[in-house]
Length: 294
Length: 328
Image (cartoon, rainbow over all chains, first blue to last red):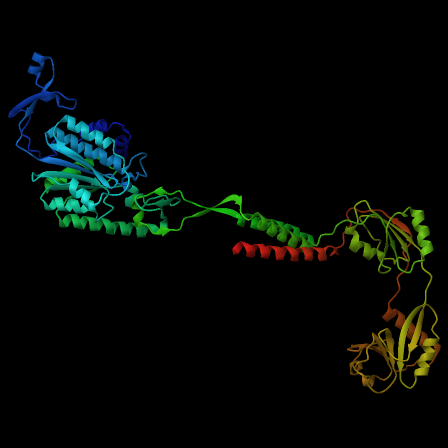
C-alpha cells in the first residue's frame, strides 16, 4: 500500500504516475455516456500524444502517411470540473512516506480523473484554489486539454489560504449543462467559501464529489512530540503535541469531520475520506464509484 | 567538621554560570495542517552557551567564591622560620640562643603561654613548608613527645622561679590569724592580703557566721562556718575539705580552720596550690624535633576571616546594587 503511494509521490512525471494508477484500475468505473468512438463520425483530426491507438484510422494513415484520429459526435455534454484545494495546509506531508504530501496525492488523483474524462471524450476543466485566488482552466475535450491540465496541475504549488467567496463564485459558475465536480482537499476549513461554493453547486444539481485527504498520522494522532508546530495557514502561534494532548486532539478532529460529514449528507454530497498512504487506485475507485452508486 | 571540606562546595559557582546563559526563543516550528485541533503552547526557550550580564555574573561568582572561602577558613602559609619566645624569658639568654642557632634574621614571636607545643600545633599551617622553628624559654613539657611537620628546635631553659602574687581578702573576727598564715608563706607563691576585695582577688576567706553580700565574688572561697552557705550542706569531702560550686565561686569548707599548727597550714596551702591553682608543668628538655610528614595539623585558623567577611559584605552590596539597576 505504501509502496504504491510512494511511487506516486516519487514519480516526477505526473502523466507517468497517472498511467501507472490507471493501469491497475481496470475498466468500467465510470458510467460514461460515450457510445464508442466513431459511432457517428464527425471529423478527422491530427493525432496527438495521448490518443488511444485504437482510434487511429489506419486506412487513412496508409493513404496519407500520417496519423489521424476519428472524432465521434457525442450526445453527452457532461463536463468534468476538477477543483483542487491548493492552500498551504495541503502541503502536509505524510509522516510515514517520505516526500508524499496531500497536494501531490490530490494532483495525482485529479490527473487520473482528467485522464479518464479524456478517454471517455468528456470535456474537463480545472480550478485551482491557490493562495487567495482561483486559477481557472476552461473545460475542453481532447488530449491537448489533458496535457494542458496536467501541466497546470504540475505547476501548482500550495500556499496561502482559500480564496474568498466572491472569487470562488466568479470562478465556479457553470452553465446549465450537467457537470461532475470532483473536489480534492483537506476540508480543514469548514464552513469555508469553498464548502459554500460546493454546496451551492450541489444545490444546482451538479454531481459534486468530494475527496477529503488525510494522513495516517493525523488520523491516529501520531505526531512527533519533540517538535513545535504551527498552522501553515495561521499566524506564528506555536502548538505542541504530546501524549497528554492526543485524546483532546482526536476528539476535536473527530467533531470537526463529523460536522463536515453531516453537512455533506444533508446536502446529498458524497464525501470520501482517504489517507494519502492508501493506494491511489483504491481511493480513486472509491471516489468515483461512490458517486455512481448514489 | 573540617572546614577544608567547604572547598568541595566550590561547584556552586556553576549555578550562576548556568543561570546566566542567554535565553533564545525557539522559533523553528514544523508546519502542521491540523494544528488548529491542538492547544496553543508558549514558545519554548532554549539556553545557549553565551552569557548575558557578565558583570553581574562575575560579581555573583566572586560572592559565592568568597562565601566558600569564608566558610573553608583558609590559612595562608605566610610565616617563615621564626623564633618563638616563651613569655618571661630572660632577654639575654634568648639572644644567646638565637645567635647560637643561627636565627638572627628570623622574626620573633611572643607565645601567649608556656605551652609552646599546643600553640605550634594550632598555628602550624601558617608556617611555610620549609620553615624552621626555634623555641626558647621555659617551655612546658607536654605529656607525649610532640610531632610536627616542621623542624622544631627546643632551647628550653628553666626560668628562675619568680614570685607570683595571689590576692586574698579575709573577712571575720579571726582575720589576724589568717594574715599570719598567709604572711608565713614561702616558695614562689606570695599571698597579698587586701583590705577590700577587687577584681584581682583570687581567694576570699569567709570566717564569719553571717552570709556574705551577694555581690561578692571570687574564684575560691574558704568558709569556716558552712551554715551560711546552703550549697555546702551535702558537699563531698576530700582530705577534710568539703567543696561545692556556687554562684559566688567555688567553696571550700573546713571545720578546723584556721589551721592551728604549721603542718595543717602547709597542708591547706599545698591543697590550694595543687587542687585549685594547678600543677605547674615541668620544663621540656632541650632537643631538636625532626619534621614528621604525617603529623596532624591543627584546626585553628580564622586569620583571614575578617578580610573575607569584609569582602563578602562589599560583594554583596555590589551584587544587590547591580541587580537593582538591571531590573529598572
